[in-house]
Image 1: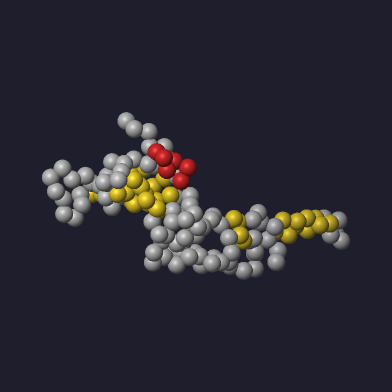
Image 2: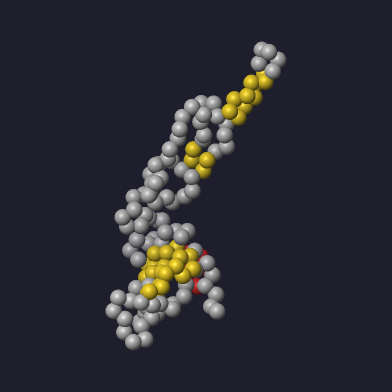
Length: 136
């Protein structure tokens, strides 16, 4: 078995107009650091997606080469037809407000970081402690 590093075959199908001995059209997902381990087992039109950078590649069988597609370039650009998320990537919980980050069906370049819930203690006039949790 060939070592493919982080690359995982996610789909394999016959080309639309197969000839005798045709190879399958393959789709791969993996990490850009393992590009040199990307298998060359599919036919022209096979694709590879780098999950860490958003770069895409297409295989050309006669040259036995994976070529970067125009949308590549390390920018982590949104796939065609998917709107990029342009809102904040960090949020601090608040008790008085429901917070919604509009991320549904959007392409995100990073994870959302949720800060720890604000917590504080102060002495009060009754010789006790007042606790504030997620106070605005």
